[in-house]
Amino acid sequence: MKLVAHGLRAAQDLPIPLWLALWAAAVVLVVSFVMLGALWNKPLLGVHERGRAVGERLSRFVTGPLRVVVQALSVLLFGLVWASALFGDTDPYQNLAPTWIYVIFWLGVPALSVLLGNVWRAISPWRALADAFVWVRERGGVTVHPLAVYPERLGRWPGAVVIFAFATLELAYTDPSSPRALAFAIALYTYVALFGMAAFGRDTWERTGEGFAVLFGLLARIAPLHVLDGALRLRWPFTGLAGADPSPGTVAFVSVMLGAVLFDGFSGTPTWQDLMVDLEGPYLRDQPGLGELLVAFAAVGGIVTAILLIAFAYLAACALARSSVNAPRSLVPDFLRSLLPIAFVYLVAHYATTFLDQGQFLIPLLSDPLGRGWDLLGPVDYVPTVPVLTQPQTWWLQVTVLVAGHVAGLAVAHDRAVTIFADKRNALVSQLAFLALMVLYTLGGLWVLSRG
Image 1 (cartoon, rainbow, N blue to C red):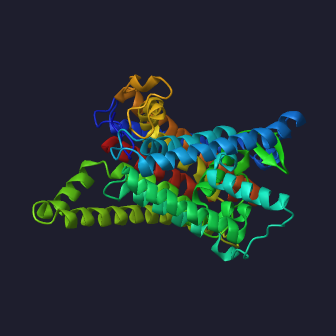
Image 2 (image 1 turned 45 degrees about the horizontal axis):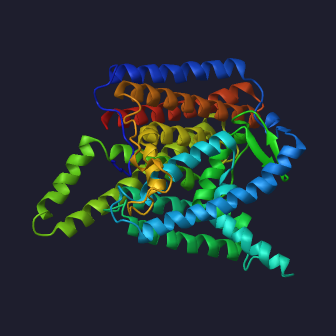
């Protein structure tokens, strides 16, 4: 069993020349831009954002009994994962926690969110514990109120800090798969999540400070299912991305989402690996601890740099779009949601092979979660099929999802443009900057993938 905290990437031996892939991707984006300008002349996403209600009985079942059962199971599973990290075998290959956290949780929940909506509200163990506490208190006749009012000026900044911390643990810490390190991280985050919910309210903290809830909630806007006023509704995919997102810290949050994955890809390139060898090499013999520390600090710097590059490119595109049509206000909140499909396809392109290959080891790990030689479920001797995809298949998957995600981002941005600009020409001109942004993001992502 091979456990990796980072994504498995396509080799440099590509099925087609890189230059051809880059040109083809750029052409697809330009053609898509032209077609959007010619055919998409009025807002469409917002019109269908609410969707239509599903059957009342099904809705009550999903939002009622099914959610309670799922929450109970999530708490039990959370306890198992934490116990595995705290008491199980210190070999990450034999311990459930690393595979569960880095593969099933980090890669699986985003996919579920895009397919089924904001499932994290039901499967979050921290929300389940908070709901259970409130339920018990209210059954005892005590009305539970938040301890403080959340400062709205903070917006999603706390959530961005959480995702940055997780990315740092995964990409910069010297031993990110260490079960004991993960046990400490779980305990620390549990304290932060429950304290935030107690201090500011469950819904408020999930919307702003519980980083994973913020991330999965944003991605869930792509999904065809959502809950509105307590009822389950069905809508066209991507219609949940209509509208602006003026919440403070959202640019930072989305930039962390994109930048962390971008750096993970770049950290696998020969350029970065050679740089780290040169940095750590002089200390390997006499001061190996110092060498590891320097590499860790360099990785943190790399993550920050990638985040800043993503944010700068987006802000520059918004500034160019505004100046091109003399818009009276900033356009930054208006087009933020067009980056969400890109954030999702970055995850898919970089980590699909990790999920398909490493995810198979979940079967024996659940049978022996602490690495004690147990065979609780029977398939402890299960032999996974690895790799699932060949290198050419992996590359074609990466190219396809990256280009498709950026085309979706263009469409979301275009829909917003025809919503806020009455003049069709202004709507189209404003999108030239975002076409350049999408081309830049696409070519940069493909280059990084090709070099891994």
